[in-house]
Structure formats: structure tokens, C-alpha cells
Image (tube, rainbow, N blue to C red; front, side, top):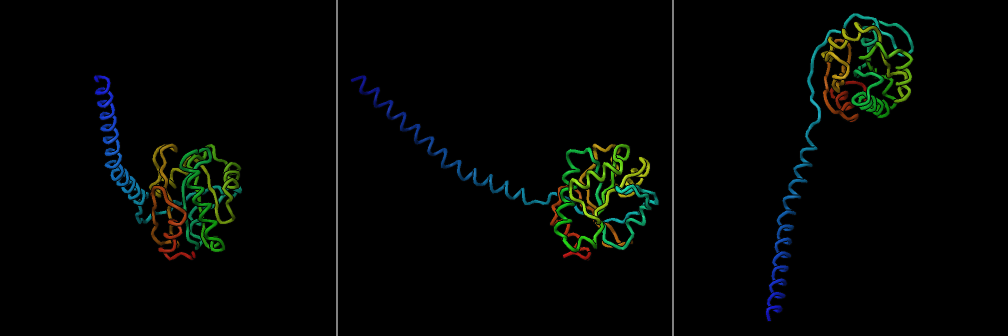
Length: 211
């Protein structure tokens, strides 16, 4: 008889445990769904900031990735819209991401890419020789309208400071893309994780010759 009662108690306990587990799952599902919804909402938030500013281009000489020495002012003020970033070839984090975005922008612009000047400035000129920049450019499929520039340390710092991109050390640089529709016009400054489509949209909003 005692054995029979113990069996019934065991069955009742198991039933209660099953009920509790089932209830916990039922109550947890809405919470999980809410968390997933909130996570989705967070992912839709902008991942970059946009500001507009006027910058004075420094009168310095730069060296293009083909070895040619040029006036930086003339390179930026040739009449084309400019999309510019700051990179260094040994970077393994932000720079490949920025260069990938530029490569995609170049592809998406298609024929219009010849009307836009993509500019990448090295912030590690001591190591980034024109040959290294050319190798880096080839890795990302840079076309004739996407140019890479190096020079002296002083030149690189002067350019970075002029565009509020100098952070004291190459390892501290941020993901920054600067866009200008024409010489003398203000620059749009995008800081953060910007997609190629967002870059092109910004160009379009500024009145550049893009699709």
C-alpha cells in the first residue's frame, strides 16, 4: 500500500513539474519574441553620423600611387565631385572596410564613376610607398578614377588636420568618408559604418552626377 502511494506521489510530482515547465515556455515565448523585435529595431538605427562642414584644403604636394608628385589642391579641385577617405595599407580593421565600400561605390556608379573622383589618403606615409599603395589599390580593383596618395609625414598630418581627421596615431583613426559636390562647396562628413548605397544616396542628395 505504501509502495502504491509513493508511486502516485511520484506521478503527481512529475505531472506538476511538466505543467510548470510548459507554463514557463508559454510565458517565455512572448518575452523572447519581444527581445527579438527590440533587437531588430535597434539594428535599424543609423550606424553613422552626418554633418556638413567647410574645410580649407592645405596647399601641399602629394605623391599619387603611380609615383607622380601633384598639388593636392589641384587634385581635389579638378571640377569633379570628390569622395574621400583616410587609410593605410597595413590596417586590418577599418581600412579594408572603407576600401570595400569605395570598391562597391565604384561598381554601383558604373559609367558615372568617371565623373566622380574617389580619393584615399594614406595616414602612414612612412610605410605606404606609391608601390604599396598601387598593390593595395589593385587588391580592391581601383579604377582610373580612384586614386591613392601618400607623401611626407608632415603632409599627411596637415591634410588630416585640415579635414578634422587627425587623431594623433594611425591606430586611432575613425571610419570617415567626406563628400563634396564641387570645388568651393561644403563637405558632407559621414562617420561610422556607411553602406555603399548610403554614400551614393548622399552624393545624389548633394547634386552630384550620379544615378
